[in-house]
Image: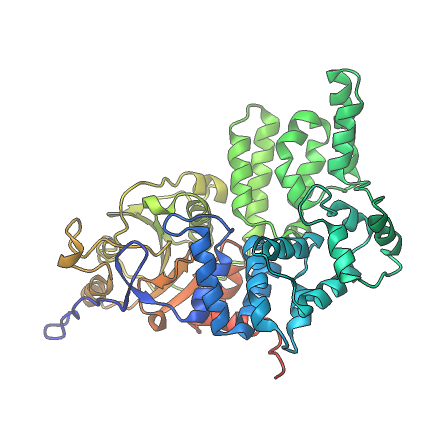
Length: 490
């Protein structure tokens, strides 16, 4: 125990977060990546979507080259759609004339409707597609066949696929030539899509029993012929269970297919949503589906690296975490606790050590975590740790603390920054744990100086791919994005 080298005075931070508490700024690169990996184009607890878009535009302008890589990383690796569409639209003016611009817009298009959404975003802003967008999107048509063009023709939307074809004039290829001709003539239909088949089945039956039988036949064929996409399978599990229970075993077999899971870009919290729905239904079929969902979630999140030593996972359960941050926070906390054999703490205004059964499934463990109202007190993490020695502390939070060191007092009497309590913990234990800051909201600030923590962000299980690198490189998330796409040639 140190006698003369006492803990440092509380750090005051260098900014104020959206909750009004002291905080630390992020580098523009980390802030941009965190925003892209945690946003669905919707209002957040502390920030409206439009305000987030303004912040995104500023971050993109600061470094368009890095922004291009980050947007592609978010779309193609993390499955983030709406925010990547907004980012791609905002990048247009900064990418103009750059040698990498056409390739960027071509690579952004993972599905046909990616270019429709970017176009619709710009249309709403009364802006036109740039020359690079037009060339990149036109080239992207090469990878789509007639089935895909028919499925995403968007005939009932303001921006239709035929409008884009007439604007871009993509060069027809053998695999899509006839479909493009039919689209321009207004004759292309979404033939063979599962949505169309089910709609037709519901219209053809003379009685409700006939319609039910026809729908069951469609579900049966789709499952047995493996014609249902993975996300569609996950979203329609209840329909399959209720309308075609005979093929539920085959559907569940596909649900736990590792190759299909890896290819799907399904975000892990989707499993938790489906699991919650199955747990509300009676019967052994629903229980079998819940078991399969648990297995699928374990497979999806199996890439957690093995980290040596003792780990504490601290989950923020305060009021501002409700919604997507709570869903993914609970799930990732459960994954980390099981994979790392870690201790678990929940914290809001106070911290609480929690005993969990590591033998429980990931989803059942995640469902057992309860979120509260009230503030976020980072100080109490290190008080609650007591004398237990840890090699790392992984904090899952929206990073929106405002509660000062002395608890319920006013901000003038203390600071939300927990560095003093961390220093106290180090002094009393002789232990210097690495602090991992897992951002679940992308609100733009940190509770620790960026250079002193390992930063993660995102709703995808791909965050675990970065974790092993973070052990040796606290800036691994940013460095991964920097190396994701070849640097543009000047």
